[in-house]
Length: 150
Image (spheres, helix red, strand yellow):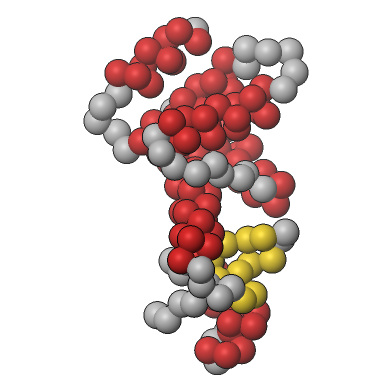
């Protein structure tokens, strides 16, 4: 079974790389090849695949595990990988936003402070951060943003 999903992953030249990684992860976890540690190993493989493609690692946070686990049910029931694709893509965007902000040497502030200085609703900004429509990222559980002007 592992050989099959590895072959499918390598042969897929039509789909977006993050979508391929998400589907591979769903297939890997469906096979459940180990007695213990399948989830951790699967997430390590996600990061290996991302790094091999030149992208940074991602974090699937504990707060997001409910939707993460729901994506397995959706895939099992309907072979729909869209939920996992969204999880991987949003996590990758957040990881990229963080790295770009640091590489540019931008001044970093909490999203709460940013909301005050920009006279914007913190809830609106938090929703935008979760959807990654602004270049926000989390550090130690706190949403932050670099020098950003919409």
